[in-house]
Image 1: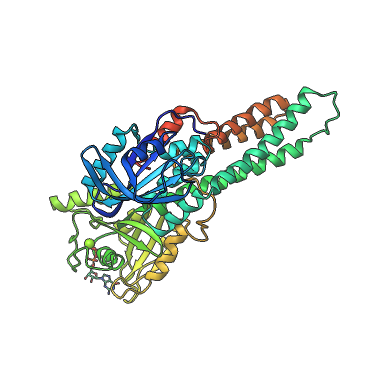
Image 2: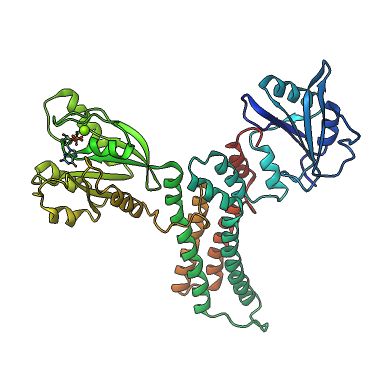
Length: 457
Ligand SMILES: Nc1nc2c(ncn2[C@@H]2O[C@H](COP(=O)(O)OP(=O)(O)O)[C@@H](O)[C@H]2O)c(=O)[nH]1
Ligand SMILES: [Mg+2]
């Protein structure tokens, strides 16, 4: 049974006109509150029906009937929150919903805070903290892949993965302390190699998990992508090709694009926030030079750089400067105008930029290959959306802390410190993982997580 004293209520559907609107009530008094504002048409009563029952009737307040409604009764612990829950479904008019909510509050419920239903579900052991976070991700998912991975976390993938790592560490720690504390007892001696193996496994699992964070973010938010290169190589043509319509002005006059033109596109499953920029060159034109400056800034901050070159021309000084500027960055060299006779020196580009694609932005040739290479560079290839994934900054920090602690445990082991010293580090790692799943998270952490939710969820 819930530890929370209050009974909370909120409109759980969007504050907009819709076919149906739902008011959710949760807490010890949920059924009493609901029965004060609802009169059933048949003989079934909110206070006496069993759980998972729907009752048709009317909601009313002191001024009279408000609307026809169906209430659904859930009895603790078999409900979303783990408490008694009543959901009143009425017509989805804003006025109706607000008046019904007012009646529910007058009958003794208090307004639910943001995320409070899900917070109660967490406090009542219905969800782990990571599953609760997944509920929020699921609500805000924009793409299919993001939704799919939020769903697999809602199913507890991350929780189970972390629990597996934690229990491995706990086992090692328990064994170590038993051995340290009761050396005279008959505890099978644990060897350095066994601890080493256990810790190395934990470290690798954590590293794999941490790597999922960046890919997950790319899937959820897309990656900032700058299309750069000297004037007239075909940047705007490429932008239009990827956007699927004329987004940027294309002419054969160098310096046509001045402002940054942006669009979000889906290229082979990767969401790119594309920015077509002014061609990089020295110029006396004031407007153009501002554009060139913006292009250079974009180049520095982008998560992915598409560096465009003209294959029908020799490499210019500007091309060389660009190649220099993107060394070591996540970049793809796009050798454009592949329909024309080739003059460009490819070896120079290849030696600095590992990924190279031929395109004819004009005809569209090479765009599929480009999509493949983008997926490869962003690590989207072979990415299993049903696997456990680190979904947010909070989880990442906890996992990072755990990994650092495991690293320290390994270092302590390698420099022949006492098993006690190793154990202190393992304890730190376990604490970080228990905070990640919420099994041992402070109230402040929990409040912060639910603070980001919407009211009614
Ligand atoms: N032959 C050929 N011409 C192209 C190709 N891509 C762009 N162009 C032409 O090159 C000129 C400059 O293109 P634009 O996209 O404005 O270049 P930007 O200055 O880099 O944005 C235009 O006349 C385009 O039609 C291509 O793949 N093949
Ligand atoms: Mg342009």
